[in-house]
Amino acid sequence: MFITDFDGTLLTDHRRIRGRDLETLAGLRSAGVTTVIATGRSLYSFRRALTHMGLGPEDLPLDYLIFSTGAGIMAWPGDHLIRSCSIPKDGVLAIAACFDRLGFDYMIHKAIPDTSSFLFKFTSGRNSDFERRIAMYPDFGRPLETAGTIYDQSTGVLAVVPGRFPREQLNALRRELFGFSVIQATSPLDHKSSWIEVFPLGVSKSASSQWLARHLGVGRGMVTAVGNDYNDEDLLDWAGQGFLMENSPAVMKNKFLSLGSNNECGVSLVAMSAGLLS
Image (cartoon, rainbow, N blue to C red; front, side, top):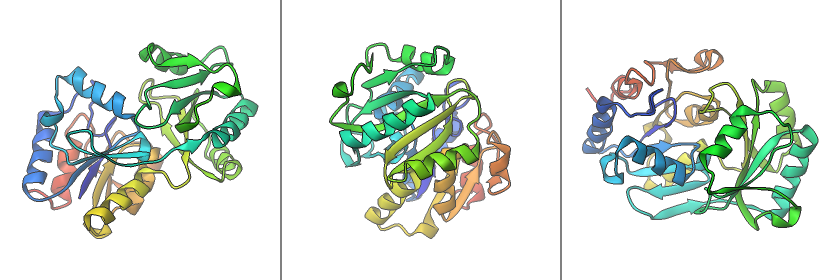
């Protein structure tokens, strides 16, 4: 099994997939390797990205899509959802209360398959990355007015924090929200802000990849994964072989081998280095 992250890994800075990387994914499938994309994007956002590139579902040499940082898994192409997770309303209320106390701007996403719909609370008055994300989905977001408007089930809650969110603060937040999965990622929009995502306990790229591997009878040692950001770290730790892009945070390069950047067909270099293709 070959698992690749999307933004900053398979996707270039110009939001395109290089032809060579598409050929690599096709070559892997021809060689009997299961190809998987594991992305933080919702299913809607992922499909929209393909449309912007002029690609249809059949143009992507993919077997499975892990989306919303592992909250959902879908067989590709098609609409066959094989796994999804959500947070009940009382859990979302607890997360929202924590984020309110910390002064975070945040979004609550409706449960799969309607993850594109969200409620948002914007109290800081100045958060360009947060505002940009709202502007990207004008037909799907609405302000969170009262607790009574919160969905009965939600995929997760996303806080957008300007700048870097220190590791010690992240660890403290994880201790406070110990009944959930708290995952940090660098914003794919301004590449500076921190996105703090809270999902049901056990949801992550690694957990969903492990579930899929077991479902398909693929041993952990037969899995190669590649990513570029903090929300990929658990996946790279779990995989039999874990690789980074050169455009990854420096602190992660002390832990994983980096090969090429997202703009230089790094995914193809990883497939070759892992011995999956010559």
